[in-house]
Image (cartoon, rainbow, N blue to C red; front, top):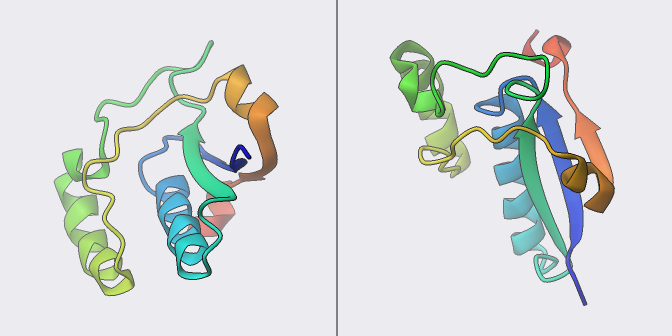
Length: 107
């Protein structure tokens, strides 16, 4: 049986959606559901009509990385190597559910 896809989307796919992806996958694994479900994250930057990001990873932005690293470590989440990935039509078509974040999640 193919894993059902949980798609998490934000603007740059370096922070919000990546943390959500890692958190969801950690929970799924902890509950023994990782064979049935998988979360991936994507961003809208870099898609048609929208300029891409300057850096590809959160750690490419030293101030943001240092500010967020302690929280990520406390949560047991490793996103250091995650490179932003623009969303594709195939991602949306395959998703069983899509979670889309806006700026309010930062407040």
